[in-house]
Image (tube, rainbow, N blue to C red):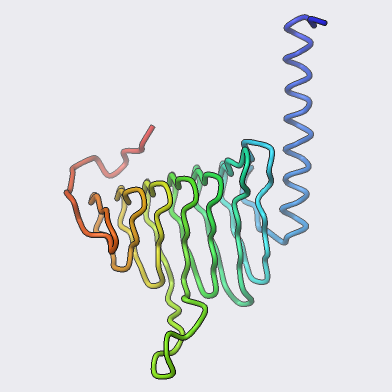
Length: 194
């Protein structure tokens, strides 16, 4: 049966409105601090285990058509995701101290961002835990890994599959394991990726 276009459009708007309300209620049950209106694209809501503080700025988008985005925040830890950031499916963010993701960041599928190693490497090396800071308009490619103590500068690009173990300067493209600078570029400070 073919329904008139206006009825189909109203139905979609109604469903999107219901889904958005359900998503916001889910975030509130997980004690997520919401500033503005985050949204979900796809059918799978993010998997959230929050024992600390999660702050979502306005217009954060979780894209999860098949695999959920996973957010794990330990007690006394803080995860902040900046305005207009886009987090793709399968991404895991594990925070035991502090992770700051800046405004307008694009995070690809199956990215891992951790501020701790969770386990000691040896008896003489304790577990490493250090804050992670990701700047404005950063693009993190498919399956990249960001490790504890890393600061990524504004407009930087992290190549697909890169393992970032050291700070990345602003306006720099890095790739590889461990990630190394490939080249730098120039752009206005207020530029954003489309």
